[in-house]
Length: 173
Image 1 (cartoon, rainbow, N blue to C red):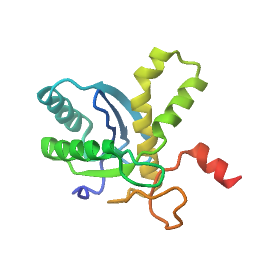
Image 2 (image 1 turned 135 degrees about the horizontal axis):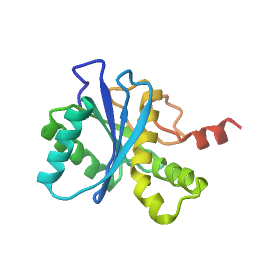
Image 3 (image 1 turned 180 degrees about the horizontal axis):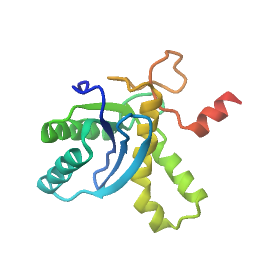
């Protein structure tokens, strides 16, 4: 939505969900993304208190909300919900929001959690925050674009987008 007013400081990545929201944050130098929590949504008032406290405690200067899009790059119904959540988050916390393509982040998180041998319940508890970390790391790798429009996976137009490392390796082979 807007660029952060402070060019330094921590960025929080949000993997939006109607039930759970994955949260990850960067260090103040914006070089590392770390998972924080999979927050279970409650009510607008409780959610507002949680995100205001998170922004203050972690000194967040920008939110990056994951935008779920189709493989061809078209936005989905969940994209509309994620954009509405992002607007609410910016209004509620006073911290600017940008949106970033989150395709495959949940699948990549599931793959990593399965490889780690976690049970279904343990995977469920960690999935959203790990997806947020993966999306936020991709945002950092893309150079922290102020805005990026989703694109199809076969679109030759170079625009910042997220392609999980496992897919990048497959493409490069």
